[in-house]
Image: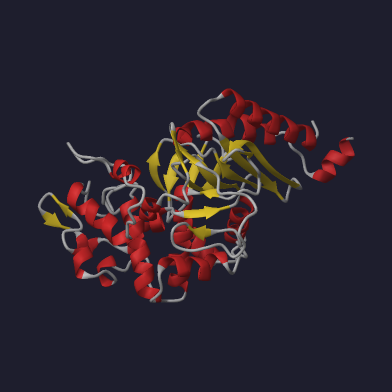
Length: 371
C-alpha cells in the first residue's frame, strides 16, 4: 500500500468520523515523519461558520505543561535552579502558608521543584477536583467568563476548597495547582512574567510565530484563520472571549498551531533546546494510570503493553489535544479533537485509525521501488 493511499484513508476516515459524531465539531491532525518522508496536515469539520483549516490556531490545554517544564529545565541547565530545590525558596509567604497540610502536618517546605514537575507533590488539582458540597472551579469560570484570575488566586482557591492527597514524593496525582506554582517559580527566578519567558525561551527561538499565551500575550504573526472554538461537552467556548481561562496559566493556556508544536517537539527530540542528559531526566517515568506514565512535564503513552512499537511521549490536554513523538516509528502526531469528552476516545482513535495504518507506511525510497 502506498503512503498516499494511507494518507487518503486516514483523512477520509477522520472526516467521516467528524461528520457522523455530533460531539465533534473541528478536529486537527498533523502526521510528520522524516524517516517516512511524510508531512500530512489534516483538518475536519467547521468552526465559527467556516471550514476547519490545518493551519488554524487552537487552545492546546495541558500540552502547555511541556513548555513550562522545558523552561524550568533550561533554567536548571543555566544553573539558576536545581530540580531538588525546595519551592519555598522561591515563593512568597502568602503562597507558602498552609499550602500542603496533610494529616495535621505541614509538608510545604518538603515540596521540591521536581515534585511539581512530575506531579508527585500531593497537592490537589484546582481544575479537575470538586470541593465537597461546593461548586467546582470549572463551574465558576464558566459562570463568570469575564473574571480575570491570577495564578496566585487559583492557588489560594485550591488551599481554601481542596485538600492535599499525600506527602510529597509518594505517588502521582495530576495537579494544575502545581504547574501554576511552577509559573511563579519561573517568574521569581527570571524576574519576568511567565508569558514573557514563554516567548523568550520557547516561542521566539523556535520561530513559533503563531503561538501565544491567551489572555496574556499576542503571537508574532496573527493567523489568517480564527482561533478554533473549544467544546466542553455541549458548551461551545470562544477561548479569546473567556477571560476566566487566564486561570490555566502555566498549566496550559497556550494557543498554538500544529506546525508550531511540531517545531517544538522536533527541537526537543533533537536536543536543540536542552541537552540529551536533561531530557533523560525529564523522562524518568512514574506510572499515573494504565498505559500512561508521567515524567517532568512529559507524558508517555503505551498503547500496547508488550511492545515499544506504539509507545509515544509528549503531552495530552483535557480538550483532546495531543503532541506526541513515537521513537520506534520516528513519527510525530500533533493535533486536537477540541472536545473534552474525547480525552480517552481521542487516544483510542489515534491508535486504531492512525498509528496502525501508519505501521504499513514505508520510507519514500522503498515506496518508489515497490511501484
